[in-house]
Length: 137
Image (cartoon, rainbow, N blue to C red; front, side, top):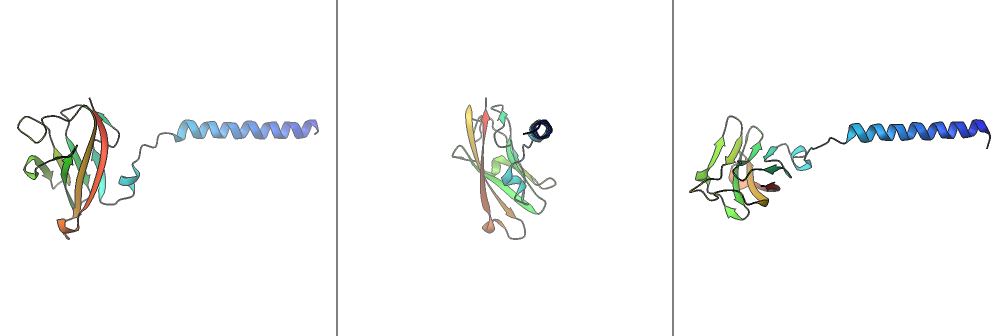
């Protein structure tokens, strides 16, 4: 191999390594949730999947306009509809743990939420369930 060929190969390797490094530095901030991004009905989990929150933080689901939702359970404990707040202006349903409610607080560690959502024009009989996990401390 001639000196010129060696320089061309070395330059190609250096450029390739540089491009790879830039992609690593600038491309690693994607925190999107495939379930949210791939579903036009869902806008956000509250808290987001994998988040760490306080034991008293609200739990909920943000759905798109024209959809409604409710929380079925948190860690297997049914959450009565009467303890949930649905804000139709923002299409968000939330539950705030507290004394006298189904949950006084979230459990320390892993928490799993099961929620149900449906398109308002079709009603709850056409509902789908979704679940997500987060951590509380």
